[in-house]
Image 1 (cartoon, rainbow, N blue to C red):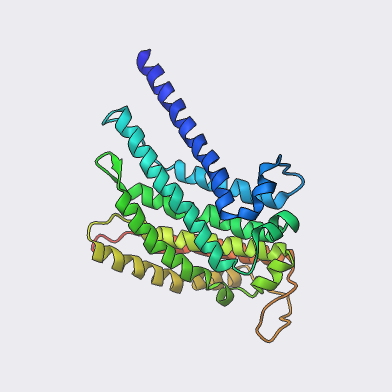
Image 2: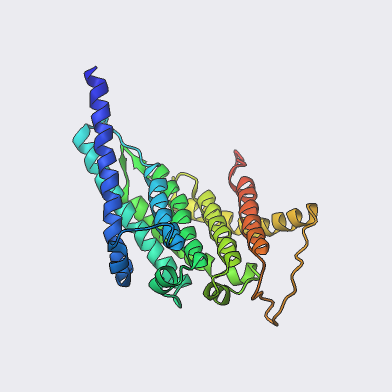
Length: 299
């Protein structure tokens, strides 16, 4: 009976730690968006600003995705487990917030958070930032899976992999203009739902590809790096094939006229944005099956 109570109280203790980190995020939000301080300190009414609701709960969902993959080892005692948990979670939490800040600085450099979310209630902007909040933890979960050594998390490994993948993501987000027919900045300023759903699927598909490439243990750093780059290049070659085959099999017709010489759509339908986002996601999942889940014993 005492053992059951001990386990129960230990779980309650870690629940308090996780909730404490959510409170920390609330105040870190002020550092990321100083001009939103007054709005964020007021009572929050989700029905009055759905854009801010999407942003807020996507960040909390992202934290939940990261925390759900943490392993807490009590083999070395409660104090050691608590110390390892606090240190590893603090580092991962900091890298998560920093990742969102870096990617937002690259993609949304011409937009202001308070203008788009608080004043304009821009759902499209909210969906773009939500894709960062939910997509980045997909990659972080891979870090945490392979960072465990001797019943503790290897902080050096987590930081090393973060540096590597943040560079990959930086290049990845620049490819949206290549793979999409939508005019990003114009449609985002117009609060286009089509752009929001399209970009959400685009970014999540990139995180799936990178996460599937990372999903292998590091035995030799050179072989690991070579295999990682090889899988990403292979994914870039295979993903368009799946996209073309899906379009051909289901006879999908893009029945919108291209209105500009640069072949970008300024007034797409909502359905077209959903189509782009879904086909990005579906093609990425199928690509990860081919590049990651088929194992060859001699390679």
